[in-house]
Length: 538
Image (cartoon, rainbow, N blue to C red; front, side, top):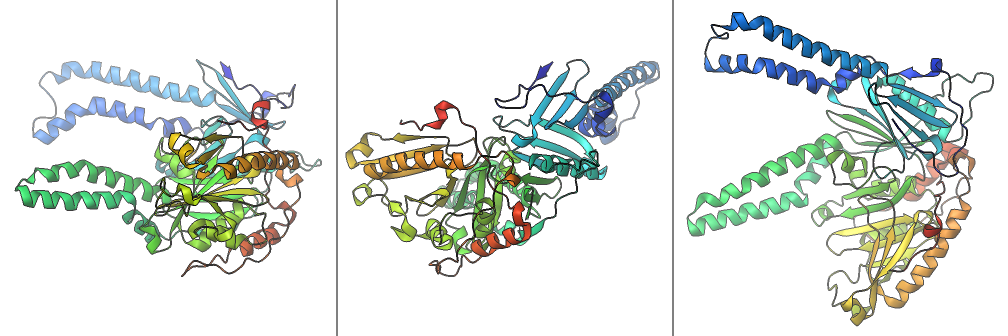
């Protein structure tokens, strides 16, 4: 039996509710979860019949009558044991939401209890695989800062029950107390306001113009040229694995990004996507540790961008397709879409000209938008990107931009800076530059300021550590509805990028505040250990 130990500062001596208050998952859950075992049993006992049918041979051998009772008995025993295991798994799986915790008990041979503090929930996802959608069921995942593994996973509940439980947990986590006169009344689901959606045509176009497509096209052209020069057709065989891998990657990205929509509600940012497997994410405000806006050279033709985030509990992207999709805040969108999502993640940009500084971070050069870039002496280390590599700061976030062809803008809220390090190799010492690395939770975003002037890097190191400490002190509540909404945003200066505008960041931020009122999402603090409180030089 294993149990999660509550974090430091968690409530002690939490009473456990009576057994009558524990609830069970849907009775069909084990069968939906274990359909592979039933399929394996059917394949094992039906493989021989299927092969005989394809070969045109008799379905039954001459001595089948003598073996039939033993086969039926063996298959029946295996089936009964499997179904019995499913029933016992369902019976011993119970969950409870009480006293600021969500708890799950599971297992009948090896008992396990898992629990998570509601105010530590980083995100809540509703997942519907294809088979679960057929039965109207859904899986509920509660993510906490535990290096990527879901602290609590409930599979499966009826879709209405899953949505109701998510609303209750988010309301408790946000500090909404139940009515004392009706303590057992379920919390209503918070209203939501649509922000954007990704058309399927744009999603398909982004896949066709991806880096994988470019390299496969280059490989195909090279194969044709080599085949024509050497009169050897064998070069085409090298493309088969690449084409198969590209097709699988296309399907995975299309299946995960299809029908992508984003909305804002008092309990956080809501994302929905999926073709066969539907998924609905809810990111509570302030849980985003770092954000990256990226644009490849081919995407620049249509002005497309992708946004990825680090969220505690999701882990590093790239380990599997599910993790990559869950850390994607926007699979493909234009500049107004980017500004809308930035306004949700960072409602208070900390500058009177958010449009100008973010536009300079996405497409600017040199000192546009107040960015400090690589000094002229470091141009030999980055002949193409030295005018792009740089940083800028606002009252609430640090912005890092890089890349001349593959453009990136990384945004790190000050209170999310866990530690920092200065890196300088032999060549960097020769040219008087250094890299500043910011450490956040695991994810696809790796904040790094490359080839900054040594004096500028040291000054930023000291200033950012002070800003991070001050930002953490200002965030004094674990419940975001107990904090004060950020100040209004001032209109931005005109945008410099041709063919696009940043209209949307101030308008969206203002619209969110007007609709949500005092429930505007704001960040919650990060508890840091003494080692994390002060940044470290590397």
